[in-house]
Image (cartoon, rainbow, N blue to C red; front, side, top):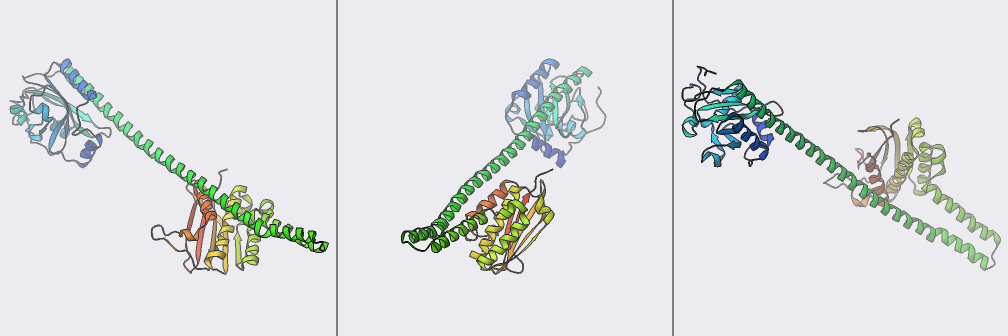
Length: 406
Protein backbone atom coordinates (compact mmCIF):
# COMPACT_ATOMS: atom_id res chain seq x y z
CA UNK A 1 0.00 0.00 0.00
CA UNK A 2 1.69 3.27 -1.08
CA UNK A 3 2.00 6.01 1.52
CA UNK A 4 -0.32 8.97 1.39
CA UNK A 5 1.14 12.27 0.32
CA UNK A 6 -0.40 14.10 3.26
CA UNK A 7 1.74 15.02 6.24
CA UNK A 8 0.37 14.05 9.63
CA UNK A 9 1.42 16.28 12.46
CA UNK A 10 1.47 14.66 15.90
CA UNK A 11 -2.22 14.75 16.96
CA UNK A 12 -3.30 15.61 20.50
CA UNK A 13 -5.29 12.60 21.62
CA UNK A 14 -7.16 14.23 24.48
CA UNK A 15 -10.81 13.29 24.03
CA UNK A 16 -12.14 13.02 27.62
CA UNK A 17 -14.38 10.04 26.87
CA UNK A 18 -11.54 8.10 25.28
CA UNK A 19 -9.17 8.90 28.16
CA UNK A 20 -11.87 7.87 30.64
CA UNK A 21 -12.31 4.54 28.81
CA UNK A 22 -8.53 4.02 28.91
CA UNK A 23 -8.45 4.67 32.66
CA UNK A 24 -11.44 2.37 33.24
CA UNK A 25 -9.65 -0.45 31.43
CA UNK A 26 -7.17 -0.59 34.30
CA UNK A 27 -4.32 -1.42 31.92
CA UNK A 28 -1.97 1.61 31.94
CA UNK A 29 1.12 1.20 34.10
CA UNK A 30 0.36 -2.44 34.91
CA UNK A 31 2.74 -5.39 34.67
CA UNK A 32 2.97 -7.62 31.60
CA UNK A 33 0.32 -10.33 31.42
CA UNK A 34 0.35 -13.64 29.60
CA UNK A 35 -3.08 -12.98 28.10
CA UNK A 36 -1.58 -10.18 25.98
CA UNK A 37 2.01 -11.45 25.67
CA UNK A 38 0.73 -14.63 24.03
CA UNK A 39 -0.92 -12.54 21.32
CA UNK A 40 2.18 -10.50 20.52
CA UNK A 41 4.28 -13.69 20.35
CA UNK A 42 1.76 -15.13 17.88
CA UNK A 43 2.02 -11.96 15.81
CA UNK A 44 5.80 -12.21 15.47
CA UNK A 45 5.56 -15.87 14.42
CA UNK A 46 2.62 -15.52 12.07
CA UNK A 47 3.91 -12.37 10.36
CA UNK A 48 7.63 -13.08 10.60
CA UNK A 49 8.42 -9.73 12.24
CA UNK A 50 10.88 -9.00 15.06
CA UNK A 51 8.57 -6.68 17.01
CA UNK A 52 4.87 -6.77 18.00
CA UNK A 53 3.16 -4.45 20.47
CA UNK A 54 -0.08 -3.86 22.33
CA UNK A 55 0.21 -0.10 22.65
CA UNK A 56 -2.08 2.11 24.79
CA UNK A 57 -2.08 5.80 23.92
CA UNK A 58 -2.95 8.59 26.35
CA UNK A 59 -2.53 12.35 25.93
CA UNK A 60 1.25 12.38 26.46
CA UNK A 61 2.74 8.93 25.76
CA UNK A 62 2.19 5.40 24.54
CA UNK A 63 2.41 2.58 27.10
CA UNK A 64 3.23 -0.96 26.00
CA UNK A 65 0.93 -3.40 27.77
CA UNK A 66 2.75 -6.10 25.82
CA UNK A 67 5.95 -5.86 23.82
CA UNK A 68 8.02 -8.48 22.02
CA UNK A 69 11.36 -7.61 20.42
CA UNK A 70 11.79 -3.98 21.53
CA UNK A 71 15.42 -2.85 22.02
CA UNK A 72 16.63 -1.37 25.28
CA UNK A 73 15.96 0.89 27.06
CA UNK A 74 12.44 0.79 25.60
CA UNK A 75 11.87 -2.86 26.53
CA UNK A 76 12.45 -2.01 30.19
CA UNK A 77 10.75 1.38 30.19
CA UNK A 78 7.71 -0.03 28.32
CA UNK A 79 6.69 3.40 27.04
CA UNK A 80 7.70 6.22 24.72
CA UNK A 81 6.59 9.82 24.33
CA UNK A 82 4.12 10.59 21.56
CA UNK A 83 7.00 11.98 19.52
CA UNK A 84 8.03 8.34 19.07
CA UNK A 85 4.57 6.91 18.43
CA UNK A 86 3.04 5.62 15.20
CA UNK A 87 0.12 4.16 17.15
CA UNK A 88 -1.24 7.62 17.98
CA UNK A 89 -2.30 7.94 14.33
CA UNK A 90 -4.29 4.72 14.54
CA UNK A 91 -6.06 6.16 17.59
CA UNK A 92 -6.59 9.55 15.97
CA UNK A 93 -8.02 8.16 12.72
CA UNK A 94 -9.70 5.02 14.20
CA UNK A 95 -8.42 3.09 11.17
CA UNK A 96 -5.39 0.90 10.43
CA UNK A 97 -2.09 2.57 9.61
CA UNK A 98 0.21 0.84 7.09
CA UNK A 99 3.77 2.09 6.46
CA UNK A 100 6.08 0.23 4.08
CA UNK A 101 9.18 2.40 4.61
CA UNK A 102 8.96 5.05 7.30
CA UNK A 103 12.10 6.80 6.08
CA UNK A 104 10.38 7.84 2.85
CA UNK A 105 6.81 8.13 4.15
CA UNK A 106 5.95 11.82 4.68
CA UNK A 107 3.43 10.87 7.37
CA UNK A 108 6.03 9.51 9.79
CA UNK A 109 9.48 10.26 8.37
CA UNK A 110 10.21 12.77 11.13
CA UNK A 111 8.89 10.53 13.93
CA UNK A 112 11.50 9.77 16.60
CA UNK A 113 10.76 6.05 16.44
CA UNK A 114 12.45 5.86 13.04
CA UNK A 115 15.71 7.15 14.39
CA UNK A 116 15.71 5.80 17.97
CA UNK A 117 13.78 2.54 17.71
CA UNK A 118 14.72 1.53 14.17
CA UNK A 119 11.08 1.39 13.00
CA UNK A 120 11.03 1.04 9.21
CA UNK A 121 7.91 -0.96 8.33
CA UNK A 122 4.78 -0.62 10.50
CA UNK A 123 1.25 -2.05 10.42
CA UNK A 124 -1.19 -1.25 13.23
CA UNK A 125 -4.93 -1.75 13.75
CA UNK A 126 -7.19 -0.13 16.40
CA UNK A 127 -7.67 -1.74 19.80
CA UNK A 128 -11.26 -1.07 20.82
CA UNK A 129 -12.63 -0.73 24.35
CA UNK A 130 -16.01 -2.35 25.19
CA UNK A 131 -17.72 1.04 24.73
CA UNK A 132 -16.23 1.53 21.25
CA UNK A 133 -13.47 3.97 22.16
CA UNK A 134 -10.02 3.32 20.66
CA UNK A 135 -7.54 2.68 23.46
CA UNK A 136 -4.47 2.14 21.30
CA UNK A 137 -3.19 -0.19 18.62
CA UNK A 138 -2.13 -3.77 18.03
CA UNK A 139 0.86 -3.43 15.75
CA UNK A 140 3.71 -5.26 14.02
CA UNK A 141 7.07 -3.64 13.25
CA UNK A 142 9.96 -4.57 10.98
CA UNK A 143 13.43 -3.07 10.72
CA UNK A 144 13.47 -3.32 6.91
CA UNK A 145 11.02 -2.12 4.26
CA UNK A 146 8.01 -4.39 3.82
CA UNK A 147 4.93 -4.53 1.65
CA UNK A 148 2.14 -5.58 4.01
CA UNK A 149 -0.45 -7.93 2.49
CA UNK A 150 -4.17 -8.08 3.11
CA UNK A 151 -3.58 -11.35 4.98
CA UNK A 152 -1.09 -9.57 7.26
CA UNK A 153 -3.71 -6.96 8.18
CA UNK A 154 -6.36 -9.66 8.66
CA UNK A 155 -4.09 -11.45 11.15
CA UNK A 156 -3.52 -8.20 13.07
CA UNK A 157 -7.27 -7.50 13.15
CA UNK A 158 -8.01 -10.97 14.51
CA UNK A 159 -5.35 -10.67 17.19
CA UNK A 160 -6.64 -7.21 18.11
CA UNK A 161 -10.17 -8.63 18.30
CA UNK A 162 -8.94 -11.29 20.75
CA UNK A 163 -7.32 -8.57 22.87
CA UNK A 164 -10.57 -6.57 22.75
CA UNK A 165 -12.52 -9.69 23.80
CA UNK A 166 -10.19 -9.97 26.81
CA UNK A 167 -11.04 -6.35 27.69
CA UNK A 168 -14.78 -7.07 27.41
CA UNK A 169 -14.40 -10.12 29.63
CA UNK A 170 -12.56 -8.08 32.23
CA UNK A 171 -15.20 -5.35 32.11
CA UNK A 172 -17.93 -7.95 32.63
CA UNK A 173 -16.08 -9.57 35.52
CA UNK A 174 -15.49 -6.15 37.09
CA UNK A 175 -19.17 -5.26 36.75
CA UNK A 176 -20.24 -8.60 38.24
CA UNK A 177 -17.75 -8.16 41.07
CA UNK A 178 -19.25 -4.76 41.79
CA UNK A 179 -22.80 -6.11 41.69
CA UNK A 180 -21.78 -9.06 43.83
CA UNK A 181 -20.16 -6.69 46.32
CA UNK A 182 -23.31 -4.57 46.49
CA UNK A 183 -25.44 -7.70 46.92
CA UNK A 184 -23.19 -9.00 49.68
CA UNK A 185 -23.38 -5.62 51.41
CA UNK A 186 -27.18 -5.60 51.14
CA UNK A 187 -27.36 -9.14 52.51
CA UNK A 188 -25.03 -8.21 55.36
CA UNK A 189 -27.07 -5.12 56.18
CA UNK A 190 -30.26 -7.18 56.13
CA UNK A 191 -28.64 -9.83 58.31
CA UNK A 192 -27.51 -7.17 60.78
CA UNK A 193 -31.02 -5.71 60.85
CA UNK A 194 -32.54 -9.12 61.52
CA UNK A 195 -29.94 -9.88 64.17
CA UNK A 196 -30.59 -6.54 65.87
CA UNK A 197 -34.35 -7.06 65.58
CA UNK A 198 -34.02 -10.53 67.09
CA UNK A 199 -32.05 -9.12 70.01
CA UNK A 200 -34.59 -6.32 70.41
CA UNK A 201 -37.44 -8.84 70.41
CA UNK A 202 -35.67 -10.85 73.11
CA UNK A 203 -35.15 -7.70 75.21
CA UNK A 204 -38.75 -6.64 74.71
CA UNK A 205 -40.01 -10.10 75.62
CA UNK A 206 -37.91 -10.06 78.79
CA UNK A 207 -39.16 -6.57 79.65
CA UNK A 208 -42.78 -7.67 79.07
CA UNK A 209 -42.23 -10.72 81.27
CA UNK A 210 -40.85 -8.48 84.00
CA UNK A 211 -43.88 -6.19 83.70
CA UNK A 212 -46.28 -9.10 83.88
CA UNK A 213 -44.39 -10.47 86.88
CA UNK A 214 -44.74 -7.11 88.66
CA UNK A 215 -48.46 -6.93 87.88
CA UNK A 216 -48.98 -10.49 89.07
CA UNK A 217 -46.90 -9.99 92.22
CA UNK A 218 -47.82 -6.46 93.20
CA UNK A 219 -51.51 -6.59 92.47
CA UNK A 220 -53.09 -9.86 91.44
CA UNK A 221 -51.06 -11.94 93.89
CA UNK A 222 -51.83 -9.49 96.72
CA UNK A 223 -55.54 -9.77 96.00
CA UNK A 224 -55.38 -13.55 96.14
CA UNK A 225 -53.31 -13.42 99.36
CA UNK A 226 -56.02 -11.17 100.83
CA UNK A 227 -58.69 -13.70 99.88
CA UNK A 228 -56.67 -16.54 101.44
CA UNK A 229 -56.08 -14.64 104.66
CA UNK A 230 -59.77 -13.77 104.89
CA UNK A 231 -60.67 -17.46 104.53
CA UNK A 232 -58.05 -18.46 107.10
CA UNK A 233 -59.40 -15.93 109.56
CA UNK A 234 -62.96 -17.19 109.04
CA UNK A 235 -64.02 -13.92 107.48
CA UNK A 236 -67.27 -13.37 105.65
CA UNK A 237 -67.77 -15.16 102.38
CA UNK A 238 -68.80 -11.83 100.83
CA UNK A 239 -65.31 -10.41 101.47
CA UNK A 240 -63.66 -13.44 99.87
CA UNK A 241 -65.97 -13.15 96.88
CA UNK A 242 -65.04 -9.47 96.61
CA UNK A 243 -61.35 -10.33 96.48
CA UNK A 244 -61.97 -12.99 93.81
CA UNK A 245 -64.10 -10.63 91.73
CA UNK A 246 -61.28 -8.06 91.87
CA UNK A 247 -58.75 -10.73 90.83
CA UNK A 248 -60.91 -11.78 87.88
CA UNK A 249 -61.34 -8.16 86.78
CA UNK A 250 -57.59 -7.56 87.02
CA UNK A 251 -56.73 -10.65 84.94
CA UNK A 252 -59.29 -9.63 82.31
CA UNK A 253 -57.83 -6.14 82.17
CA UNK A 254 -54.33 -7.51 81.75
CA UNK A 255 -55.43 -9.88 78.94
CA UNK A 256 -57.32 -7.08 77.19
CA UNK A 257 -54.34 -4.74 77.30
CA UNK A 258 -52.09 -7.37 75.74
CA UNK A 259 -54.52 -8.47 73.01
CA UNK A 260 -58.04 -7.04 73.19
CA UNK A 261 -60.75 -9.43 71.95
CA UNK A 262 -62.21 -6.60 69.88
CA UNK A 263 -59.00 -6.54 67.78
CA UNK A 264 -59.45 -10.18 66.86
CA UNK A 265 -63.19 -10.01 66.30
CA UNK A 266 -63.85 -6.54 64.86
CA UNK A 267 -60.52 -5.27 63.55
CA UNK A 268 -58.13 -2.40 64.16
CA UNK A 269 -60.49 0.59 64.18
CA UNK A 270 -62.70 -0.62 67.08
CA UNK A 271 -59.60 -1.83 68.94
CA UNK A 272 -58.02 1.63 68.71
CA UNK A 273 -61.26 3.25 69.89
CA UNK A 274 -61.30 0.89 72.88
CA UNK A 275 -57.62 1.68 73.53
CA UNK A 276 -58.34 5.43 73.45
CA UNK A 277 -61.18 5.04 75.95
CA UNK A 278 -58.96 2.89 78.15
CA UNK A 279 -56.11 5.44 78.03
CA UNK A 280 -58.48 8.23 79.00
CA UNK A 281 -59.91 6.34 81.97
CA UNK A 282 -56.55 5.07 83.27
CA UNK A 283 -54.17 7.88 82.35
CA UNK A 284 -56.38 10.93 81.94
CA UNK A 285 -55.44 11.41 78.28
CA UNK A 286 -58.12 12.46 75.81
CA UNK A 287 -57.63 10.36 72.68
CA UNK A 288 -59.26 10.91 69.30
CA UNK A 289 -59.17 8.13 66.71
CA UNK A 290 -59.54 8.49 62.95
CA UNK A 291 -59.19 5.21 61.10
CA UNK A 292 -59.98 4.31 57.48
CA UNK A 293 -62.65 1.65 58.05
CA UNK A 294 -62.20 -0.13 54.70
CA UNK A 295 -58.44 -0.22 55.12
CA UNK A 296 -58.76 -1.36 58.73
CA UNK A 297 -60.92 -4.37 57.96
CA UNK A 298 -58.65 -5.45 55.09
CA UNK A 299 -55.43 -5.49 57.14
CA UNK A 300 -53.69 -8.82 57.82
CA UNK A 301 -53.95 -9.85 61.47
CA UNK A 302 -50.19 -9.48 62.05
CA UNK A 303 -50.14 -5.95 60.59
CA UNK A 304 -53.16 -4.89 62.67
CA UNK A 305 -51.56 -6.35 65.80
CA UNK A 306 -48.27 -4.48 65.18
CA UNK A 307 -50.07 -1.16 64.63
CA UNK A 308 -52.16 -1.71 67.76
CA UNK A 309 -49.04 -2.47 69.82
CA UNK A 310 -47.36 0.66 68.47
CA UNK A 311 -50.40 2.79 69.35
CA UNK A 312 -50.51 1.29 72.86
CA UNK A 313 -46.81 1.91 73.49
CA UNK A 314 -46.99 5.46 72.09
CA UNK A 315 -49.99 6.38 74.24
CA UNK A 316 -48.19 4.97 77.27
CA UNK A 317 -45.20 7.16 76.38
CA UNK A 318 -47.48 10.21 76.19
CA UNK A 319 -48.69 9.51 79.71
CA UNK A 320 -45.33 8.53 81.21
CA UNK A 321 -42.83 10.83 79.47
CA UNK A 322 -44.44 13.54 77.35
CA UNK A 323 -46.72 15.02 80.04
CA UNK A 324 -49.51 15.48 77.49
CA UNK A 325 -53.24 15.65 78.08
CA UNK A 326 -54.47 14.76 74.60
CA UNK A 327 -53.43 12.61 71.68
CA UNK A 328 -54.66 11.74 68.20
CA UNK A 329 -54.40 8.37 66.47
CA UNK A 330 -54.79 8.28 62.68
CA UNK A 331 -54.65 5.27 60.34
CA UNK A 332 -54.65 5.79 56.58
CA UNK A 333 -53.06 4.55 53.35
CA UNK A 334 -49.44 5.14 52.37
CA UNK A 335 -46.78 3.52 50.18
CA UNK A 336 -43.26 2.13 50.29
CA UNK A 337 -40.82 1.20 47.53
CA UNK A 338 -42.34 -2.29 47.27
CA UNK A 339 -45.94 -1.10 46.91
CA UNK A 340 -48.96 -0.06 49.02
CA UNK A 341 -48.67 0.38 52.76
CA UNK A 342 -50.62 1.49 55.83
CA UNK A 343 -49.58 4.42 58.05
CA UNK A 344 -50.23 4.94 61.75
CA UNK A 345 -49.74 8.50 63.02
CA UNK A 346 -49.82 9.39 66.72
CA UNK A 347 -49.52 13.02 67.81
CA UNK A 348 -49.74 14.54 71.28
CA UNK A 349 -49.68 17.95 73.00
CA UNK A 350 -46.88 17.06 75.40
CA UNK A 351 -43.31 18.27 75.67
CA UNK A 352 -42.11 16.56 72.48
CA UNK A 353 -38.94 14.57 71.95
CA UNK A 354 -35.42 15.36 73.12
CA UNK A 355 -33.87 15.35 69.66
CA UNK A 356 -30.31 14.17 69.06
CA UNK A 357 -28.33 16.44 66.68
CA UNK A 358 -26.79 13.53 64.78
CA UNK A 359 -30.05 11.92 63.72
CA UNK A 360 -32.78 14.36 64.74
CA UNK A 361 -34.51 11.35 66.22
CA UNK A 362 -35.75 10.72 69.75
CA UNK A 363 -33.21 10.19 72.51
CA UNK A 364 -32.87 6.88 74.31
CA UNK A 365 -34.92 8.26 77.20
CA UNK A 366 -37.88 8.72 74.88
CA UNK A 367 -37.98 5.08 73.79
CA UNK A 368 -38.22 2.03 76.00
CA UNK A 369 -37.62 -1.57 74.99
CA UNK A 370 -41.21 -1.85 73.71
CA UNK A 371 -40.89 0.92 71.13
CA UNK A 372 -37.34 -0.08 70.20
CA UNK A 373 -38.52 -3.63 69.51
CA UNK A 374 -41.46 -2.46 67.42
CA UNK A 375 -39.24 -0.07 65.45
CA UNK A 376 -36.88 -2.91 64.50
CA UNK A 377 -39.77 -5.18 63.56
CA UNK A 378 -41.12 -2.51 61.20
CA UNK A 379 -37.71 -1.90 59.58
CA UNK A 380 -37.11 -5.65 59.19
CA UNK A 381 -40.24 -6.03 57.01
CA UNK A 382 -39.40 -3.05 54.78
CA UNK A 383 -41.36 -0.36 56.64
CA UNK A 384 -40.24 2.84 58.25
CA UNK A 385 -40.66 4.80 61.48
CA UNK A 386 -40.27 8.58 61.70
CA UNK A 387 -40.17 10.39 65.06
CA UNK A 388 -40.01 14.11 65.69
CA UNK A 389 -41.68 17.19 67.07
CA UNK A 390 -44.92 18.42 65.53
CA UNK A 391 -44.87 21.97 64.08
CA UNK A 392 -47.42 23.21 66.62
CA UNK A 393 -45.71 21.57 69.58
CA UNK A 394 -45.79 18.12 71.05
CA UNK A 395 -44.53 14.93 69.49
CA UNK A 396 -45.38 12.99 66.33
CA UNK A 397 -44.57 9.44 65.32
CA UNK A 398 -45.37 7.94 61.89
CA UNK A 399 -45.27 4.17 61.44
CA UNK A 400 -45.52 2.80 57.88
CA UNK A 401 -45.95 -0.93 57.23
CA UNK A 402 -45.98 -2.52 53.75
CA UNK A 403 -49.10 -4.43 52.75
CA UNK A 404 -48.90 -7.86 51.10
CA UNK A 405 -49.41 -7.90 47.34
CA UNK A 406 -52.52 -9.50 45.94
